[in-house]
Amino acid sequence: MSTPANPSNSKPAGDDRNLVTVDEKYAALTFEDRAQRFWQNNQTWILAACVAVIIGFVGKGGWDYLARQRELDVEHAYAAAATPEQLKAFAAAHEGHSLAGLAQLRIADDACTAGKYAEALAAYEKALPALAGSPFAARAQLGRAMAKVLSGRTAEGTGELKQLSGDANQLAAIRAEATYNLASLAAEAGNTADVQKYTDQLMQIDPSSPWAQRGMMLRASAIAAPAAAKPAAAASAPATPAKTDDTSGSAPIRLPGK
Image (cartoon, rainbow, N blue to C red; front, side, top):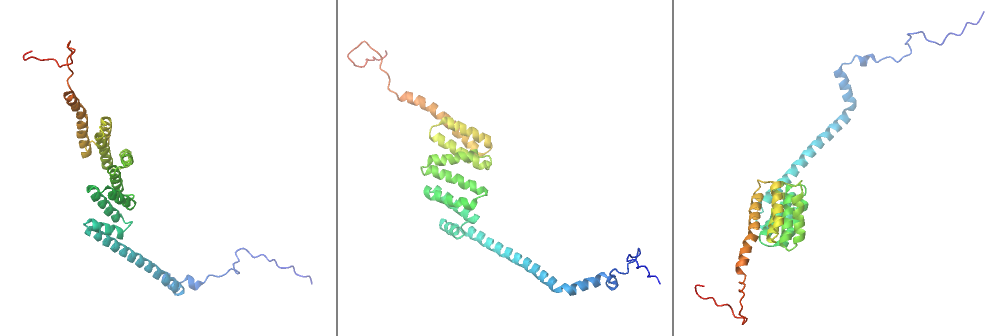
């Protein structure tokens, strides 16, 4: 009897008998059933994640609330500071805060008005870091420049005024005030050419500004002053004696009616 040929190992096309069968029970589950099964298997991690999210929201909200309350306390304390002593105490207690910078600015302005230029200059210097990035920073720079001029550091203060005047990024009001102060300093020095130059700049910066109007009045006064000084100087000069043939050195005799 002949040995039968080895059967072929190849599977007929379409024979899926060796594939893993699908869990028919799982496939028949509804969405609600699957969700319930997922919850049962992962409820611990889901709860932990939810608690973490809730704690995060509550913590952020609480922190924001406390920060806002602290800010309100600072604002109330600033509003209550009326005297220079109170402003100094507030600025020392809240150093670095923008309102502390405003307090220093008020202290500096009061000192400058009182003629205490060294004290004003120190307060302007303290105000600048706290006011950096705000419009009040330029105001403090302007005050510092004038405090330097008034305390005798004229060249340094004038240089800062020129910088503010020529800075196109600054507020027009700051530039106009700085330019007017330059014109005023030029008028005090009797420099009519600079008075005209700075008043021309004022008209370019903001012709409707009160500083421009004051500058034009200053310009008119500066131009009129030299013209008025010439006749006065001529009137006060001694008269030149008339020449005469008399060599005796005596003044000529003027008869009545001659």
